[in-house]
Length: 118
Image 1 (tube, rainbow, N blue to C red):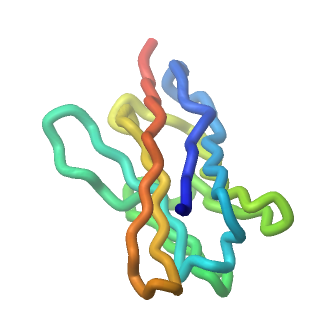
Image 2 (image 1 turned 135 degrees about the horizontal axis):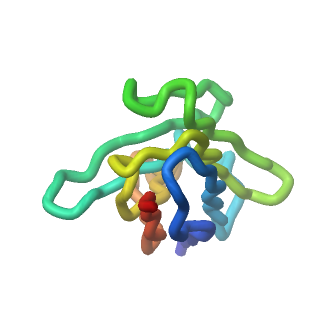
């Protein structure tokens, strides 16, 4: 049973930074890709950043230049470095991954709250 666990959320002032962590219970190479999603109150869940098995990265336009997704394959960890945070970045952030075997099975973490407020 694959498990994903997020950590690192909290309250930060506008312009501040946070680093979110996603710990996988198995090797991250067992996934096609690992993603960070976010969901703000009253809004749909939004894909924020993706890192593929091969290491390529993609971001939603609203966070380009401010957020960076990375991984530590030795620790089976994926990170989301968030800089220049804005109030509109406030949301619950979720780690997501889809398995290679069985193909496409989705796995989600429990989420971590990020609040950007003065």
